[in-house]
Structures are given as structure tokens and as C-alpha cells.
Amino acid sequence: LVGVGIGLSYSAPIICCFDHFKQNKGIVTGVITTGTGAGPFLAGLVATTFVNRENYPVDSLTGLYDPTTSPVVGRVPDMFRLLGVMYAVIGFVGASLLMQSDAGEPKVESLMTMENGEHASLTNGNGSGINVYDDAMFEETPNSIQTSKVSAIKGRGHQRYGSKVKFTTTFELTTPQMIRDSLCWLVIVTAICTGVSGFFVAATYKNFGQTAIADDHFITVVGCFGCLCSGVSRMLWGWSADKIGHFETLELTAYLSPIVMVIYTLTVQSKLAFGLCVCSLYGLWGASYCLTPAIAAFLFGDKHLGTNYGFIFFVYGVMCTIIIDSAGFTGWDFSQLNYIFIAIGFVGAGLCTHIRYLTSKVKDEELLKHHRATSSVSSMF
Image (cartoon, rainbow, N blue to C red):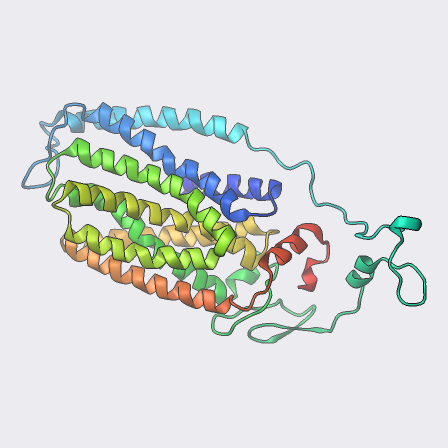
């Protein structure tokens, strides 16, 4: 149920806004996902104030509240009921604001006017007026399209990327076509390796902090501000993606995240360092949520973005959950587990570098996006 809710809360608004805003998908996604990142800021404060208003500490031996004597445990069911009602109201209001674009796909008649005098049409050399854009669109194209892996014959199969050789253009792929392409799985593995450490910190920061800091309210407030940083930072990462590139921004955050996590592990005794590291890790984690939808749209096309990104996010969420749950069965302490996820983070950063290498020959990304948004023959690319 949680997975279904997360999938709907991310996919539906993003797809809806991509329909309204054809360009600058980075900042568009950043603004949308800011809400999903900042929402837990309010929810965390409400939940903690309701369930542990007296700031009771956990048991020093077990790290938990006694289920038989602690009033905190007794308030948990009512806390979930309160949050359920609050989420339902907020979700209904948000869903009612979504609307489909009235513009639809623009119909391109011509980019050239066919008037006399000042606005005379272009000529083809013999004095006759021509519509340059329409002629270009109806030119015969070669029967084969060279891709990074093979020369894909039109009408047979689909264009393929591969995951080892650079490619120079992007394609519109259906979800089955995308799944059969190794680039899809490279993107998924990269998303998992760069995002799972954020999942782990979000799930364990409170328990890890309580190993050295005996102040439940402080740790909760740190987590709430971490969620706020995650939300606000997504606008920053979206803006950065539109300026320097989606792949470059994702690579930058992928390398910073494990470095900050090392500091987080070594300085847990300091409240200041712990708070700054948790907020920083949440902020860096937000980049994955902000950039992955735009990257999926660019690599695999806008037409099937809903199912394409839905599949990527589904595999990402399932695998992150399995990895984190499996870590809990190892019996290792939090510091040891932190180093495992630090190593995974560096692997993800290396994969980001590889994806940036594969896409480094793609020229004029904005032109390709504009062509998809305005042309009915995007399959030519």
C-alpha cells in the first residue's frame, strides 16, 4: 500500500506537469517533488508531538520503548489514525488540482510564411516558393538508423541504446522496448546505488543518533528539517540540471553523498555535526527523486513516460526495500552498516560517470526536447 501511494504521488503530478511545461523539466520536477519531500517535515512534528510530548527517552539497553509500560507505545495507534485522516485530506485537495493540458500536441503547419513583399517566402533557387520545414519533414530518410549498438532497420524491432558505447541521439521507446534495452537496467541500478543510502539514513538516523544522543525531541526535529532540506533542495537540483545538465548534476550529488555519510558516521557524538550531516544527506538524496524522471523522459521519450518511469521507480523501490531489510538481518551495528552503504554509494557514483560518458555525444539536448514537443515525426530521431 505504501508503494502504491508513493507511486501515485510521484508519477501523476510529474506526468501532468510535463504535459503543461515542455521545457525545463529539471526545475519542473524539482518544484513538484519539493512537496513530497517537505511533507514529512510537518507530519514528523505532528506525530512526535502527539505520541511523545513528554520527550520520554528510549530504554538504554534495548534502544526501544517498553511496550508494556511506556505511554509512547500506547499512543501509536491513535497517531496513525490522525496521520491517516490528515494525509487523506491533503491528498484529496492535491489530486483535485491536477488537470490535463488543453493545448495538447501543437499542430505545426509551417515555420515559413508564404506572403509577398516584406515577408516573402524562401526560394529553392529557381524562384519558386517552398516550405522549408515541411519539405525537410517529408524528405526520404535512409532505411537504417545507426545507433550505439546496432544499425536498427526501420520497421524491425526498435532502436537500441546499449550500455557500453556512446550514442548521439535519443529515441521514443515503449515500456517493453525500454525493458529489453540494457541502458534501462543501467539507469535502474544507478538509481538504486545512488538512492539506497538515503533510504537507509531515513530509516535508521533516529536509532543511530540515539546510540550517542539521549534527546528524542532533538533527533526528531533534525529528521523533520532533513525532510525539509530534501524537499527544498530538489528545486536547487532541478535548476542545476537545467543549467549544467541532468547527468552532471546527478553525478555531483552521487559523489558527495558517500563522502558526507563518512562524516555522519564518525561524528555522531556531536549534535551539531549529526544535525548538519542528516540534513545534508536528505538534501543529496532528493536529487535522485528530482532528476530520475527527467532523465527517463529524455532517454526513453515523453510519450510513454508514465509507464516507463513507473517501471523504473517500481524496481527501484522494491530493491531498496529488500536491501535495507536484508541489512537488518545481518546483526551488524549501525556504524558497520553505514560503511556498507557508503561503498554502495561510491559504486553508484561510478555508474553515474559511466552514464554521463554514454550521453556525452548527444548534441543540443534542448533542440531534441523541442522537436519531440512540436513534431509529429519524432520517430525520425
